Length: 223
Ligand code: SF4
Image 1 (cartoon, rainbow, N blue to C red):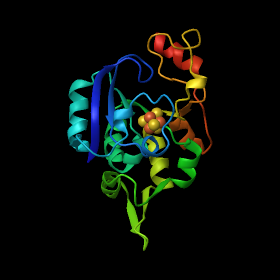
Image 2 (image 1 turned 30 degrees about the vertical axis):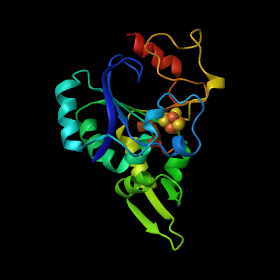
Image 3 (image 1 turned 135 degrees about the vertical axis):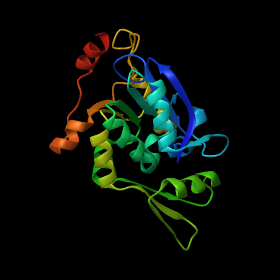
Image 4 (image 1 turned 180 degrees about the horizontal axis):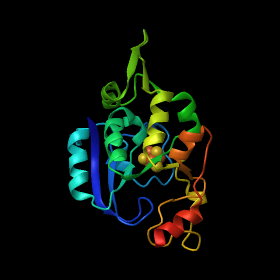
Protein backbone atom coordinates (compact mmCIF):
# COMPACT_ATOMS: atom_id res chain seq x y z
CA UNK A 1 0.00 0.00 0.00
CA UNK A 2 1.15 3.52 -0.78
CA UNK A 3 0.80 6.14 1.92
CA UNK A 4 -0.46 9.29 0.24
CA UNK A 5 -0.51 12.81 1.59
CA UNK A 6 -2.32 14.26 -1.39
CA UNK A 7 -2.66 14.58 -5.16
CA UNK A 8 -2.67 17.37 -7.69
CA UNK A 9 -4.46 16.14 -10.77
CA UNK A 10 -3.48 19.13 -12.91
CA UNK A 11 0.03 20.10 -11.94
CA UNK A 12 1.93 22.30 -14.38
CA UNK A 13 5.19 22.36 -12.44
CA UNK A 14 5.93 18.68 -11.83
CA UNK A 15 7.78 17.57 -14.94
CA UNK A 16 7.97 18.01 -18.70
CA UNK A 17 5.20 17.99 -21.27
CA UNK A 18 2.47 20.10 -19.64
CA UNK A 19 -0.25 18.97 -17.26
CA UNK A 20 0.63 16.03 -15.03
CA UNK A 21 -1.09 13.90 -12.39
CA UNK A 22 1.12 14.38 -9.33
CA UNK A 23 1.03 12.45 -6.08
CA UNK A 24 2.65 13.46 -2.78
CA UNK A 25 3.87 10.59 -0.60
CA UNK A 26 3.87 11.01 3.14
CA UNK A 27 6.99 11.00 5.28
CA UNK A 28 10.50 12.40 4.95
CA UNK A 29 13.28 11.26 7.27
CA UNK A 30 15.49 14.11 6.21
CA UNK A 31 12.74 16.62 6.97
CA UNK A 32 12.46 15.33 10.53
CA UNK A 33 16.19 15.09 11.18
CA UNK A 34 17.98 17.64 9.02
CA UNK A 35 15.49 19.45 6.77
CA UNK A 36 16.50 21.00 3.48
CA UNK A 37 16.44 24.78 4.05
CA UNK A 38 13.43 26.25 2.29
CA UNK A 39 11.65 22.90 1.95
CA UNK A 40 8.47 23.45 -0.05
CA UNK A 41 6.38 20.86 1.80
CA UNK A 42 6.98 20.75 5.55
CA UNK A 43 3.64 19.08 6.16
CA UNK A 44 4.97 16.00 4.37
CA UNK A 45 7.77 15.32 6.89
CA UNK A 46 5.89 13.58 9.66
CA UNK A 47 4.91 9.94 9.38
CA UNK A 48 2.11 10.53 11.92
CA UNK A 49 -1.32 11.98 11.39
CA UNK A 50 -3.77 11.74 8.55
CA UNK A 51 -2.94 10.16 5.23
CA UNK A 52 -4.58 7.87 2.73
CA UNK A 53 -3.47 4.31 2.07
CA UNK A 54 -4.07 3.24 -1.49
CA UNK A 55 -3.18 0.07 -3.36
CA UNK A 56 -1.25 0.01 -6.63
CA UNK A 57 -4.36 -1.44 -8.32
CA UNK A 58 -6.65 1.36 -7.14
CA UNK A 59 -4.23 4.14 -8.03
CA UNK A 60 -3.55 2.53 -11.40
CA UNK A 61 -7.24 2.49 -12.19
CA UNK A 62 -7.63 6.17 -11.12
CA UNK A 63 -4.70 7.13 -13.34
CA UNK A 64 -6.09 5.25 -16.34
CA UNK A 65 -9.42 7.01 -15.93
CA UNK A 66 -8.22 10.48 -15.08
CA UNK A 67 -4.74 11.01 -16.50
CA UNK A 68 -5.57 10.86 -20.21
CA UNK A 69 -2.35 12.74 -20.99
CA UNK A 70 -0.45 9.76 -19.51
CA UNK A 71 1.89 11.96 -17.50
CA UNK A 72 2.53 11.03 -13.88
CA UNK A 73 4.79 12.48 -11.18
CA UNK A 74 5.81 11.10 -7.79
CA UNK A 75 6.80 13.74 -5.25
CA UNK A 76 7.21 13.79 -1.46
CA UNK A 77 7.97 13.82 1.32
CA UNK A 78 10.61 11.39 0.12
CA UNK A 79 9.26 9.07 -2.59
CA UNK A 80 12.20 6.64 -2.38
CA UNK A 81 11.01 5.48 1.04
CA UNK A 82 8.05 3.81 -0.66
CA UNK A 83 9.80 2.09 -3.55
CA UNK A 84 8.48 -1.32 -2.49
CA UNK A 85 4.88 -0.18 -2.95
CA UNK A 86 5.67 1.96 -5.99
CA UNK A 87 7.19 -0.81 -8.10
CA UNK A 88 3.95 -2.75 -8.81
CA UNK A 89 2.27 0.51 -9.87
CA UNK A 90 5.20 1.61 -12.04
CA UNK A 91 5.31 -1.78 -13.81
CA UNK A 92 1.72 -1.24 -14.89
CA UNK A 93 2.18 2.39 -15.88
CA UNK A 94 5.27 1.61 -17.91
CA UNK A 95 3.28 -0.94 -19.93
CA UNK A 96 0.50 1.62 -20.37
CA UNK A 97 2.91 4.13 -21.89
CA UNK A 98 2.93 6.65 -19.05
CA UNK A 99 5.77 9.17 -18.79
CA UNK A 100 6.81 9.11 -15.12
CA UNK A 101 8.89 11.76 -13.38
CA UNK A 102 10.09 11.21 -9.84
CA UNK A 103 11.80 13.47 -7.30
CA UNK A 104 14.26 12.49 -4.59
CA UNK A 105 16.61 14.33 -2.27
CA UNK A 106 18.89 11.26 -2.21
CA UNK A 107 21.88 10.90 -4.50
CA UNK A 108 20.99 8.73 -7.49
CA UNK A 109 24.42 7.04 -7.75
CA UNK A 110 24.27 6.01 -4.09
CA UNK A 111 20.75 4.65 -4.51
CA UNK A 112 21.78 2.52 -7.48
CA UNK A 113 24.93 1.30 -5.83
CA UNK A 114 23.69 0.58 -2.33
CA UNK A 115 19.90 0.82 -2.34
CA UNK A 116 18.44 2.59 0.66
CA UNK A 117 18.79 1.78 4.38
CA UNK A 118 18.13 3.69 7.57
CA UNK A 119 18.67 3.08 11.29
CA UNK A 120 15.85 4.28 13.52
CA UNK A 121 16.87 5.12 17.10
CA UNK A 122 15.03 5.80 20.37
CA UNK A 123 13.90 9.42 20.51
CA UNK A 124 12.99 9.57 16.82
CA UNK A 125 9.35 9.78 15.80
CA UNK A 126 7.50 6.64 16.85
CA UNK A 127 5.24 6.81 13.81
CA UNK A 128 8.33 6.76 11.59
CA UNK A 129 9.34 3.40 13.03
CA UNK A 130 5.85 2.01 12.46
CA UNK A 131 5.71 3.23 8.87
CA UNK A 132 9.21 2.06 8.00
CA UNK A 133 8.23 -1.43 9.13
CA UNK A 134 5.60 -1.25 6.42
CA UNK A 135 7.82 0.39 3.77
CA UNK A 136 10.95 -1.72 4.30
CA UNK A 137 11.76 -5.04 2.62
CA UNK A 138 13.38 -6.22 5.86
CA UNK A 139 14.42 -4.94 9.26
CA UNK A 140 16.45 -5.98 12.27
CA UNK A 141 15.78 -4.92 15.87
CA UNK A 142 19.03 -4.41 17.80
CA UNK A 143 19.65 -4.97 21.53
CA UNK A 144 19.74 -1.20 22.19
CA UNK A 145 16.23 -0.78 20.71
CA UNK A 146 17.40 0.68 17.41
CA UNK A 147 15.99 -0.81 14.21
CA UNK A 148 17.97 -1.21 10.99
CA UNK A 149 15.65 -0.90 8.01
CA UNK A 150 16.51 -2.11 4.52
CA UNK A 151 14.13 0.07 2.54
CA UNK A 152 15.26 -0.87 -0.97
CA UNK A 153 17.94 -3.05 -2.51
CA UNK A 154 20.15 -1.97 -5.45
CA UNK A 155 18.16 -4.41 -7.62
CA UNK A 156 14.93 -2.63 -6.73
CA UNK A 157 16.52 0.70 -7.60
CA UNK A 158 17.71 -0.66 -10.91
CA UNK A 159 14.20 -1.83 -11.74
CA UNK A 160 12.77 1.53 -10.69
CA UNK A 161 15.21 3.28 -13.03
CA UNK A 162 14.09 1.05 -15.89
CA UNK A 163 10.41 1.84 -15.29
CA UNK A 164 10.40 5.62 -14.85
CA UNK A 165 11.57 8.18 -17.40
CA UNK A 166 13.04 11.05 -15.46
CA UNK A 167 14.52 11.37 -11.98
CA UNK A 168 15.18 14.79 -10.46
CA UNK A 169 17.71 14.14 -7.70
CA UNK A 170 19.23 16.37 -5.04
CA UNK A 171 17.71 18.56 -2.38
CA UNK A 172 16.36 22.03 -2.94
CA UNK A 173 19.06 24.58 -2.09
CA UNK A 174 17.80 28.14 -1.74
CA UNK A 175 21.27 29.59 -2.40
CA UNK A 176 21.22 27.90 -5.83
CA UNK A 177 17.65 28.81 -6.61
CA UNK A 178 16.95 29.12 -10.31
CA UNK A 179 15.55 32.53 -11.05
CA UNK A 180 12.92 33.66 -13.48
CA UNK A 181 15.61 34.65 -15.92
CA UNK A 182 17.25 31.20 -15.72
CA UNK A 183 14.58 28.61 -16.25
CA UNK A 184 11.60 29.41 -14.10
CA UNK A 185 9.22 30.24 -16.91
CA UNK A 186 5.78 28.79 -16.55
CA UNK A 187 5.91 25.03 -16.33
CA UNK A 188 9.52 24.64 -15.26
CA UNK A 189 9.95 22.04 -12.56
CA UNK A 190 13.43 22.21 -11.00
CA UNK A 191 13.97 24.53 -8.03
CA UNK A 192 17.76 24.83 -7.74
CA UNK A 193 20.73 24.33 -10.04
CA UNK A 194 22.29 21.48 -8.00
CA UNK A 195 19.34 19.22 -8.88
CA UNK A 196 20.07 16.87 -11.77
CA UNK A 197 17.79 15.54 -14.46
CA UNK A 198 18.55 11.86 -14.98
CA UNK A 199 17.39 9.94 -18.02
CA UNK A 200 16.71 6.84 -15.94
CA UNK A 201 15.74 4.35 -18.64
CA UNK A 202 18.90 4.97 -20.66
CA UNK A 203 20.96 4.93 -17.47
CA UNK A 204 19.54 1.52 -16.50
CA UNK A 205 20.04 0.21 -20.04
CA UNK A 206 23.63 1.38 -20.49
CA UNK A 207 24.76 0.86 -16.90
CA UNK A 208 26.19 4.38 -16.75
CA UNK A 209 24.63 7.67 -15.84
CA UNK A 210 22.97 9.66 -18.59
CA UNK A 211 21.71 13.13 -17.83
CA UNK A 212 18.85 14.82 -19.55
CA UNK A 213 19.65 18.26 -20.87
CA UNK A 214 17.50 21.00 -19.36
CA UNK A 215 17.49 22.74 -22.73
CA UNK A 216 16.21 19.64 -24.49
CA UNK A 217 13.48 19.19 -21.92
CA UNK A 218 12.50 22.82 -22.17
CA UNK A 219 12.16 22.48 -25.93
CA UNK A 220 9.98 19.39 -25.49
CA UNK A 221 7.82 21.29 -22.99
CA UNK A 222 7.16 24.09 -25.40
CA UNK A 223 5.89 21.78 -28.17
S1 SF4 B 1 12.77 19.21 0.26
FE1 SF4 B 1 12.06 17.07 0.16
S2 SF4 B 1 13.74 15.89 1.07
FE2 SF4 B 1 14.06 18.02 1.69
S3 SF4 B 1 13.07 18.19 3.69
FE3 SF4 B 1 11.58 18.81 2.13
S4 SF4 B 1 10.38 16.98 1.68
FE4 SF4 B 1 12.25 16.33 2.71
